Image (tube, rainbow, N blue to C red; front, side):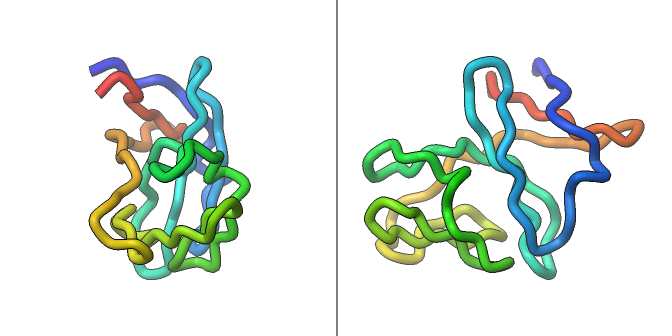
Length: 103
């Protein structure tokens, strides 16, 4: 695994989404209410639109293009079902967020 530093952990807050770049790959760190921070590819599986500009209400992420809806705790599609955001391994060490986008 090749974990890369993404951002300071102090930038993460429960109920918020943080878009980040890892090399040339856009990711989002979502910390859903009542959950834990998770890293996902920031591309909607529908039409490859950036989810970093999506609307996140603390539990649900809405794609700005066609209204696809994702569960912020799991990345699973809620509307429609049967799709999911790609999750990346993530950890926090020494106050920094590290993500493995090669996984």
